[in-house]
Length: 546
Ligand code: PEP
Ligand code: MG
Image (cartoon, rainbow, N blue to C red; front, side):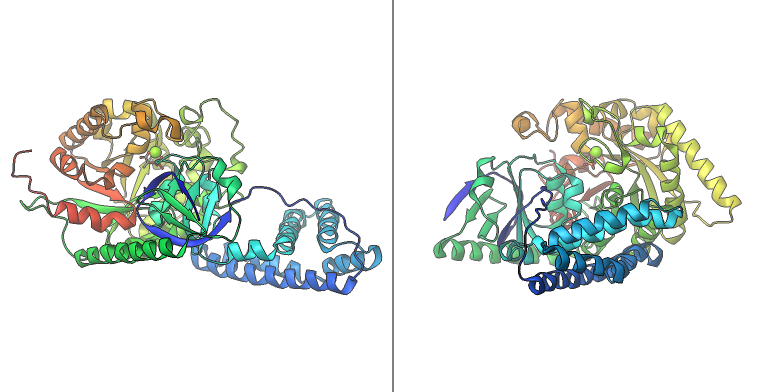
């Protein structure tokens, strides 16, 4: 047994198998093969596996984004059955005695060149698809038994660090924990782990990755930040017991379902939940959140390989709104840039991406993207209680421009005869010191504020939220941050707006009383924290002097 230590960012315990996250492309080597039949059988098995995977993806897409958008996976399955494509692979193995990986990769090149040279734009688009399906076959061919075992279930994903676009593509049903060599508590990997209610340990150091192997059993203790690799029986028993007690403790909180978020002296607050996608709604409802206070819509962009269409977005937003019934859903518009990079946006590399071209700055300079999202949002508003929130605001003029674009979108929808709700609330994130300082000017223009403490902390304290080295300088309880929140709350209320907090600090129960005393109207937290915060609220007595 070996023990490693990092910083736990979500308290839970997981026991599973190490799966090392790899970014490496599979290198294709040309090999001479004697047993042609065995090689062809390998291709057949990999193809069948690919079809089964695509069928699963198709069904998920059908549920999440509708038939029109799921169709592409049906096309991929059909392409995998195409005779010309399959004959080309078999012929090459037979006539040239080459390995399956090589035959698939040459066939992919030939077919994709052929499609790309066609006049018909539909056929040209198939060039990327044939590469995509071939890569899938190659991946399935190259998966050895050990990696397969590590990927099969209960994965403890170990990586140097994980970007949001990498985490979004992981099969979340199989991920039991994250362990990263670098990373910080406010990174999106940490946020995702909290959203998924699984332990994550960050900052274990680079050496860790060189010392572990796929498929080995490990235990992650998100409370202590310890990872036990190849645990001995005594440790396994001790941690299994701790895990059972932890689950039991969390179950006790379930008694709070259906109860009010009310202090002992009768002050009420809304407790909402943060989500990153349609699938998270289940957990929101299970944890009895009063609404959704932050839907990070950029995850729809991160999980796609090209711009999600208006229809795709509309389906996702509508689904969330319908599932939430008459509970409020606040969807934040695209917050791409900084640590959330999406290839097809083709953003330039920047020296200081957190201070650069991100979020509303992209939306206001690329209005076609912004308008597509707003059209989808307003269309979806007819199906529930929607609030739209804008990230990274620093000035009044940005807000004026945003509201003008919203008006244009609504006018266009009306003239197209498309229904939308007239009661959509508009709000902004208070996540820059500038927004908090001019909150008296911004408040009259909106229905609500939502404080993004993750970014507000990074910008106020000049502490890069991705940099684990400076975490000790990054005091989230710093007086400057609390004063900015209080100032924003006062300005919101003076102008008839409500104010919530949707950054990670909202779940910090050592501050719940402070936030209540400031008059914060809503706290939006990872679904797994809703009942814990409710428990805290119900224990507070504001009539007692603080
Ligand atoms: C925040 O900055 O606090 C926030 C909620 O947004 P994100 O973490 O997605 O930047
Ligand atoms: Mg933010």
